[in-house]
Image (cartoon, rainbow, N blue to C red; front, top):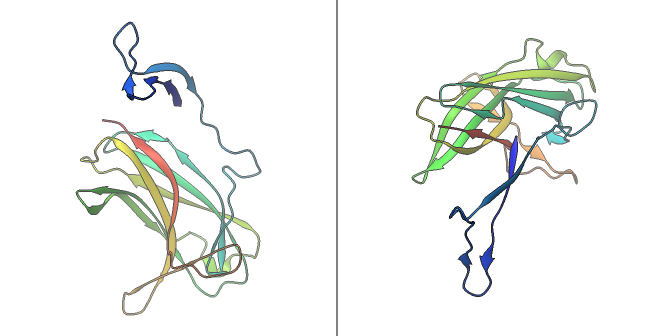
Length: 182
């Protein structure tokens, strides 16, 4: 649920005008946030390495409290026959005091190995994101991506590819935001 809030200010001085109750803002109405219509929730087209494509996502709930779990569901499809088995990740991140903080993270290998995925068939990956108990109240981005792990334990992130076929120097996608309440 979103809130439509308005306020007025005096042009030239930028002084905020107050209501009879002394408030600077007024809540007009709550608005329901709904998924983009389509066969899948929130349809998107995001290419990772010309290997797999993110085609939709859902997240429940969109608002949570510290310590609670948010369930992120991603819908993927193979763009060509797969030779790798990928691990998918999601993180709730913030920038506090100049350092990147991870307030929740999940890495999962799908039950059906990606090397067995049929080209074009939609596959569902669910990532449970449990917020740290010390997560400050704020809106946070959720980033996602995928990787393979080398025999030496190294992580090989799959780079995104833009609509013109150029490989981007970005191994993750800023997918959406969630609100953490205190």
